[in-house]
Length: 348
Image (cartoon, rainbow, N blue to C red; front, side, top):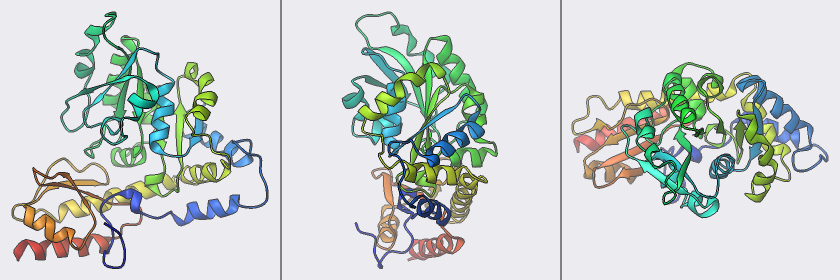
């Protein structure tokens, strides 16, 4: 399905949004003259300093090209040849990365059923009985998504409890932070509170879904993991030659909390959308709205009527569950027009 003049604002993904004007300005500013390649440039140096400002003096940031690549690089730092990764059964690395972890990292994903997409310490503990068994891949890392694939957020205390459980068992904690900014905005905390302060070892910092263009980062908080990243980033095809254009975007988002402004706005638009569903017969929220994602259960005829005019996806088609995403450039008018069409379709 193509997006063209027949479709109003897309509610299918925050990846469908364009680039924030401030980020575009940062790209243009970096496009002046020549600069050394592969990160030996002043824009990357600025970005690395901003990572330390945001996540603590021991944090080390590495720019990469996309979110799946960020996950593969970050996870690869924590793994041995006979390792397994513990994650929720809804985790992006398990459901939407085409088996990249198994294929590229050569490890087993152990997926765990969860409520609202969130792993609990007891979920992790239930998988630790295999440690020492030579017939079974050995757990090396717990990987969580923040925001989860179901739009819910881990609190700082929940992350800290998982980190404590993982570390006590000799495992590390990885965070897929594709929407880390949306989580911090919802929780009304800084980025450090849900990463460094909570005991996370390595995470991805998502930017593309929050106003950037092909820009993500791997951030290492456990210094023992850092020596391998220059090689693994290159080996994973995530070392950009013209890195200044990625670093400039990441720096722009980390300047004056632009990341928060963008994510907060997207979250508010999702909340506005969710509030507008309250009096619709046959329509219900499937999961709590804690980010820029709204999951709703609709009658099939209503969903199809709306899909003829708006771009969005089914999450669970047999159950009638759809997912609507908002972004930094979603306006109240976009949401209200969408709700107006939804209400009209519901009564016809």
